[in-house]
Length: 260
DNA sequence: ATGCCGGGCGAAGCCCGA
Figure 1 (cartoon, rainbow, N blue to C red):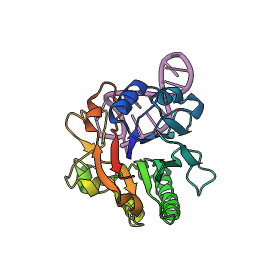
Figure 2: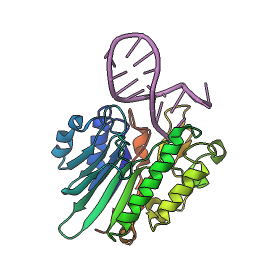
Figure 3: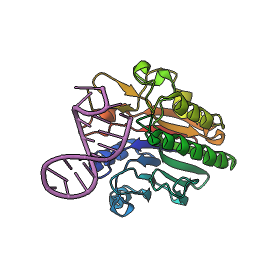
Figure 4: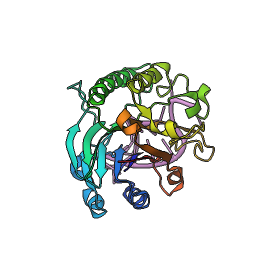
């Protein structure tokens, strides 16, 4: 089973590009972030025409996450538990079943958190507390589980073109990285790092300052696997070529292949 | 470079992202 994560930066502005990628990459499951539309405006028909089902948690203008899958999506949960006041559309979860197995997946759009001396950073760290709490519950199901998405976290200095420029950024602050370590230390595996030791492999390049041309990127889109999923991991890769397409997202897809 | 680009909203210019 091929499972991908892709921050699309507006599904409406990029529907043709996204569908082209779906046809080429043919993921069994795709976890989308930043769809930037309400659920009733999501282009379901276009995905259904390619044989996919959609589970969507939308929001006007900002955020928005979705699960796109060839098989049925069951036990869908919308929103990250732990804060009834938080109305950002940043988390959706569901179970995708084949005839022989099932995998639970979540599409995560973790808050950016900049500027790092404001309540936006506090919101990010608290959101990560909630994610850790929920991931602890899911881990204890002892299922194949993939927590995929735009984490807005640079895990290590090997995952950024120039770490000295990012030391005080909310994506690389020590508090942020500590939270990601807490999550991983529950027993999750960073699928990309399990398959690729090469440093400086990126998933995001800013639109500005020729970041793509200079390869000034960061690795912030991740697939975290429960032990039961990690045991079935075959490969994990970044579809870097998509960043060179016309009108690209600033993120590219990351995907893994599980023996499921 | 705490916004150079790009999308949403809505019809100019601000909010937001990383």
